[in-house]
Image (cartoon, rainbow, N blue to C red; front, top):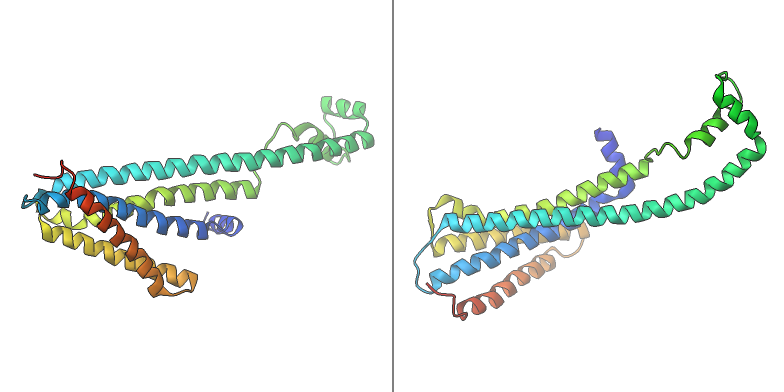
Length: 244
């Protein structure tokens, strides 16, 4: 089984696609939960000393599960539709080829002999066995090629990564809230530091696989984190409903 999977990975080159999906969606998951955390943080900044941790955890898990279902189902259905389109085009091309090949068989093999052979038990060494099988079974049996199996395998892998990455990314910022019954400003700061730590890891990972500047990748990803914070917080703080 492992050997087959390795073969499928080589055929489809899905590893690079999965890496890209994982980094992007893991990062998206963290930033999505960051927005939720900033919403709870406004309660503390406007006078409420603490927020019950289980409320934050439930909201974060609900959002993360939604991202998983959305990412998995959306990727699976879109990839499946794309693969079906390619397969239909291949089948149409093969259909034209089979018509030409069938005409060639009909010219070489008398149809009456084929029909007679199909009604009687013919010897295994008969020269027309292969021709009869091609003529009879080609449109009755559909055998998945190695490429089709590899594409199906790649579709499942991409769908799992596309859904699982934002789920994991969404759970990461919630880690400190599992250890306190009520979350204060310190808990939120720890959560933001955890997000920053994982952003640095993702930046380093991107720098390694791209063989580019690690520092540049890290700074670009942190910039998006800072921009999210700077844009979201003023909106939440100056929204009339954002208060105790």
